[in-house]
Every structure is written in structure tokens, then in C-alpha cells.
Image 1 (tube, rainbow, N blue to C red):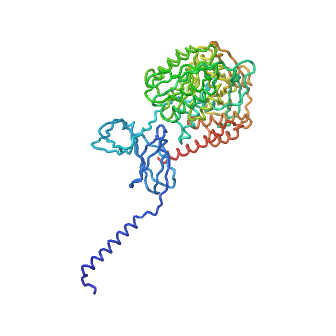
Image 2: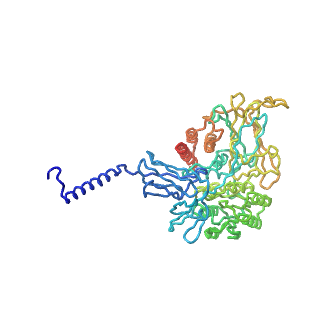
Image 3: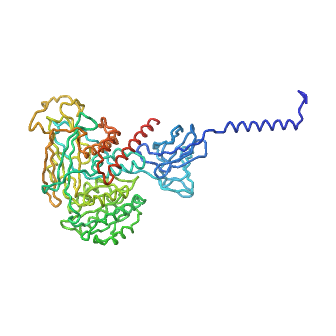
Length: 640
């Protein structure tokens, strides 16, 4: 065919066919992705509360690839570098994140200004959005959000309702203005096990969940017990402060007497067990049941146990039974199941009434409450609970509290109940912690040797420029309360140790603490004058009552001005200081100064000691994880 000669129609068709095939091939090759997908994983958090979010929808933008975070907020999805991941959740603002080199992406979602936790239409009925979860699509029509759910999937939506009592950390005081520091001792350890739960779930705890004194007092320390007939011995140690070498750290240690189990008084116990709907789940009622059965194994024939339960109403699940009838008691515990609302006030009243009916004079009369603290029927406010316990504690019945659960733990209420009820508060996050509270520290948990224990420290202004108590913010007392036997202190059980730490700014050190104010106009300026012994830094007074007495007794010791180098301090001193330093970092304390994760971890390693139960080794692992999480949060904050 010559050039310019018209082509045959069939030839034209073949040419066009070839061109189309070439274009399709070109488009296909042009759209072919040579980038191999990688697995992206991470955890989704609420930016305000730092709680994990389950059920978050994660989509690879522009594709059908999707995933959903699990109950612990964890997710995993296949994606290519350079693509975007879209995170969507009811009641939160959506977030787009570009996939880069890092295959671990933690995400913090911001709660929406208008909550979508309202009634939504599902088929021909309706249900509260907070009670549902599924494949969710948000449709905006006429300015109104309509939520469509895949009908085959309905799951409880995890809403974090945990509550912690806020407090302002202790500041530095000038002994010329405030020479006395007074507080009630605290043997609770709930804050530490709660911190462990958060870290093991891949997140840092809320600031108000970190109580430094409870973290420090989670651990047992090698202190010598009393030898003079007193129930408690007092010890002090002064050394360089780890986070500021110019400052000193004073450790005050109390050690309660140890009593063999067969010498302990008979127990009249009432297990008050929350069986409401909020206790459903493996880390709630089943763990509470397992914990109580561990305690049953420690009981003797002269001990007695009754079981009171509460949900929509309170009832007696087991009448008071001798402690050697272990099968009967355990069968009653195993028969419990969760469901209904939470009549906590009625449960407490019935438990106190049951305890009084079987009261053992000179014995250990105690209610052991197992709950998440979520009271919502009857007497439920903190004030109601406090008034109820104030009336009942005069009967001689103590109240100890075991906290369970996550996502709805009412820590503030649980701590209040124990403090006002002459008892202690522990948070049980796993069966190992239950064993610690119910078996290893059985005597300390249940048997009081000194009640209403208070400490008052007088600092010598000739030696001390400023001082600060680490922790105990919820246990501070007025100076007049120390000698007032009507004011409650803390209780110490058999073998308990209690540690308090003071940071001290010595006289002559150039420091910004406690701060500077203008000279007073209407009274003379106080000067540092010498009264008493120049070699004394402080005097520590300790006041307590015997379990059956109403009048307190006094002990006191003097702290000599002989600070040790930190390296020469005892292993217990160095380890306790490491725990306190971690607490300051977790709280982002205004007074953390030169505190560091690396420093406290190294110090804790060097002070681990025998550690037969492995608690100190566990602390080191948790501190290392906290360091990584803090670093990850810093990166995430920078990205956002």
C-alpha cells in the first residue's frame, strides 16, 4: 500500500485495536506499585486521658484496606510508604497520618467538641451509641449526624470513666515560717500496681494516678523491728539527693513488729463483694474471686468469714462460717456472678451489721471490700460514704479495700473508703498481686499493731534553708492535729514498713527554693538564729495508739547533720529514691530538677539486692518501659 493511500476498513480496525491495547498496557504499567506494603502497628489513645481506645476504625486512604483497634487499643494494618492512614472513632476528631519509615505509629485522638454519645437509629429500634460498636459510617445530612452500624456487629464500647482525686504536689517550705511538717502515715500501695497496669498496657498513667508515697511503700525494706516492747521502731538516714547533688534527702523509716501467724488474734471477716454489671470481665469479678480464695487458704479454725454481696440490692451470700470450712467458703465464692446496678451504700451497711453481729472482742474485726468503686445506687457520693464509715468505725470494725478492673476504676472513692475506715487500699491487677496482698503480706494486710499513726518533723533553721515532703499530699495534717487524738492517722499492720522522704536545701546553698518575697512592712524580718544543738538537722516525732486504746503514745528521734554520699547510702535508701524519682518524672513534677530515667534505672539496678520475690527486678523493667513510652509520647507530640 502506497503512502497516502486510504487504508482498508479492516486494517483501520486492527490499528485502532493495537493502539487501545498499548494504552491499556501503558496505564496498567504506570499504575503498578513497586512499593511493597509493610505492616504498621501501634496503639490508639485518648489525648486528654491517655486511656486506650478500642474499636477505632483505621483505613488506608483511597483503598478498601481497613482494620480496627482491639480492646487494648492495639491495631495492625498493611500500608505502603507515602500513603495516609485515616483514624476514625465516634465522639473523636478524625486524624490522617502519613506512613513513613517507622512501622510503629501510636496515635492520640482528640475528643470532638460535640459528643455523639446520643441515641442513634438502628433498624426499627434505637440504642445508646455508647453501648454499641460496629462498622461505623458517619453521614452528614442537613447538619445532622446520622450513624449507620453494620447490623451484624454489636460490642460494648470501652468508655474510660476512671476517676482520680487531683492534688497539688508539696512545695518547699522555709523552716523560719513553717518549722513543722505533719502527716498521717500511709501503707497503701494501690498507686504502684495501678501504674504497673498502665505500663503493661502500653501507656503512661494519668498524673493524678501517681502517688509517690504509695509507689515507694509498695516495697518492703530491711529495717530492724522494735526491741523495747513498742509496736513500731523508727529509723532515719540522710544522704545526697540523687536529682540535685547540692541538696540532701532524708529518709524516715518505720518498721512494725512481726508476729507469727499462730499468735495473731482471731479474725471476724466479712467479704463485701461487688457483683454488679460493672464487675463483668476477667480482670474484675473472676480475679476478685481468685483473690478471696487465696485469702481463705490462710485462715485458721478460730477465724470466721461471712460473704455479703451487692448489685441492685445487698444480700448475704454466706453466713459467718469457721475458717477451716474452706470448701464451703470457696463454693460460695465460686457461685457469684455479675449483673445489675451498684447499691454500694446498702452493701456497706449490711457488711457492718454482719460484722457487728459476730464481733470478736480483742480480735481482728474487718470488712474486706472487693470492687471497682463504681457506686451508683443509694448512698454513693464520697460525702455519703465518708459519713457512713465515720459512724461505723467507732464499733471497732475496720475496712480494707481491694480495687479491681480497668476503664471504670473509681480510685478516688476507694482510697477515701480505706483512709476513713481504719484500713488499707490495694489495687489488684493480676493474680500475682493478689498473692502478694493475701499470702506474702497476709499479716500486714489484715492485722493492725498500731493505729492512728502520725509523724511530725521539726526542722532546724540553723541547718535547713528549705524542705519538701515527697508525696503524702492526701495525708497532710495541721500541726495541731498531731497531739489531737480525735484526728485520724494511718494504721500499720504486722511487719509493715513505711518510708517518707524529705528533700532538704542546706543553709548556705545557692537555691531558688523556697522562693523569695518582699520584706514584711508590719513586723520584723525573722533571722536564722541558733537555738538548741547545731549538729541536729531535725527531730522526728512519731505518735500512735495501740489497736484497742483511744489515747496515743509518743516516740521521737533526732537526725544528726552527717549526710552520706549517695554511693555510701544503704541499698534500701538508693532503691527508694529511685522509685520516688520515677514518680516525679511520671508526674512531670515542678521539682524534678535533674531527675532522669537513666539515672534512676542505674541506681535501682545497683540497689536491687537479694530480691527473692522479684519485685525490684520488675520495677526496673517497668521503669525502662516508662522511659520508652515517655520518649514515644514526646515524638508523637512533636508530630502532632
